[in-house]
Amino acid sequence: MPLVVKKFGGTSVGNLDRIRNVAKKVKKAVENGEKVVVVSSAMSGETDKLLEYCYSLSKRPNPREVDQVVSTGEQVAIGLLSIALQEMGIPAVSLTGWQVPIETDDIHTKARIKHINSKRIKEELDKGKVVIVAGFQGIDKNGDITTLGRGGSDTTAVALAAALKADICEIYTDVPGVFTADPRIVPEAKKIPIISYEEMMEMASLGSKVMQIRSVEFAAKYKVKIHVRSSFNDEEGTWIMEENEEMEKVAVRGISHDLKESKITVVKVPDKPGIAAKLFKTLGDKNIVVDMIVQNVSHEGYTDISFTVNKTDADYAEDIAKEVAKEVGAAGVDRNDKIAKISVVGLGMKTHAGTAGKMFDVLQKEGINIYAISTSEIKISCLIDEKYAELAVRALHEAFIEDKDVMVID
Image (cartoon, rainbow, N blue to C red):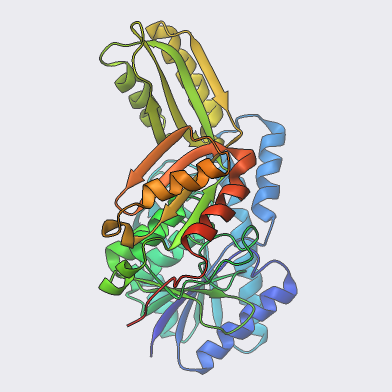
C-alpha cells in the first residue's frame, strides 16, 4: 500500500463544508488503497485572529506565550477533520505536534524541527487509521509548545514524509499549482507543470506564497517528491522534484515579488573595520534573518549600510541598529517599510547570458528605480518602491515568459 502525506492549508479547511470536502478526498484515497497521513493548517483566518489577540494586549508579546495561543488553531482543525472522517466510517485519530512528538529547537515563533519520533504514527497506521497531525507546531527540550513560522504546516508535512519514507507528499491549497507569477497580478500567468527543488526554494524565499522555503529544503535534502495541487478539483498540479537537463532549457521560470520586507539604513557610519561585523552579529544573535545588504562607497571617511529584514522583525532590528549606531558614532538610522523585492528565477540562467541586463532594461523603461540588487546562479532580485511592485511583475512577466514555454518535459 502506498503511503501518502496529504497537507491541507487554511483555505482548504476554512469552514465545516470544506472540512467535509477534505474528509471526502481522504476517504476516497483510503478506498483506493492508500495509507494516509494528513497534515492540517488552522482554519482560514484563525491564526491571524489569534495573533491579533496577542498584539492587542502587548506591542511585543512574549514569544513563548504567542506559541501557546496560536498553536490552538491547528488543534481545532485536526479534531474537526477527525470527527468528519469518523462520521464517514473511516477510522481516524488526531495528534498535535507534541503528541507525535515533533521535536524542535527552542526558538519560539520560528522553531526548526530537530527530530520526529514516528513510532506512534506508524502504530496508528498499522491499526488501519488515518493519522491527522497538526501542522506548524512541535515541542522543545523543555516541554514547551513551539511553532515553525508562517507556512510551517508545509514543513511539518514534508518532514513527516521524510521521516515516514512516504511515497509522495501532496500539498493541497487554494491554487492549482505553482505559477510563473501571482495570477492575481498577472492574469496571463501559467501553471508550471514541473519545477526543481532549487528553483522552488528560490521562489519560496522571494515571496511565492505556495510553499514555505524550509519545507522545500527538507524535500531536497531527503528527496521527497512533492505534488502541489488544488483542494477543489482533481486536476494535475505542479511536481517539485530533482533537477534534470530539460529544466535548463528555459532561462526564466517565474517572477516573484515580496512586500513583507523593511529596509533599515545606518546612516553615516565611520568607515572602519569591524562595524558591519558588530551590527550583523548582533542581529544574528537575536535570530533576525537579514536578506539584502548594501554598503555605499566610502565618502570622506563615512559610509551608509542598508539591509532588509522581514517586517515582523523590523521593530527589533531597528532598535538593534540604533544601539549599534550610537556605539560606533553613526549619524542615525532610517527605516523604510514601503519597499518591494522583485525577482526573476530560473535554472536556465546558468547557461543563458543577458538575463540581468534585460531585467534592468525592463525596469528602466517603466521608470522604476532600483535601490539594491542581489544575485545567485539562478535568480536576480531588485529592491524597488512598493508602489511599483505590480507594474514591475507584469512588465517582467511579459518580457521573459509570455509566449514562451515554461517547461520542456522529456
